[in-house]
Image (cartoon, rainbow, N blue to C red; front, side, top):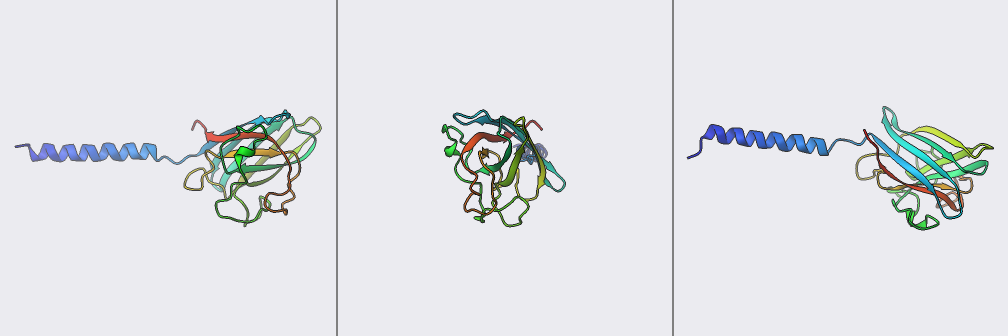
Length: 177
């Protein structure tokens, strides 16, 4: 017959191991990164980072190779930039089925990030904290894509702001914590 004390310790040890293992697996994501590459015929490249902060998700983008002016900037539903025109990325990420709007609107697609503003050298810097997007959970942006568009997002036209062709695309992945 097995010693009941040893049996109890084995059970406690197994439960503790499983608990610690599941905690390691279930750690919330706090950082993500997206490396933008140009679509066919374009030269736009960049890096977009997403970091969990107290008030939401801080988004920082540095993009180059753009014509001077405003360019739509969105999270799209699929992490697939394989098509030459990035149409494989699908539409804007919109799990709650909201209308297209600006990034400061309370009711909007989760993917509505607004516009990048490129200077005369073709560089754009974007930095804001978003209160809607998530890095963890069922509506997380991990595995989706960021798309930069040729034209300005007007925040009104449905379903996507009339921002034109896709000039760069990248898949959002986990960043080293």
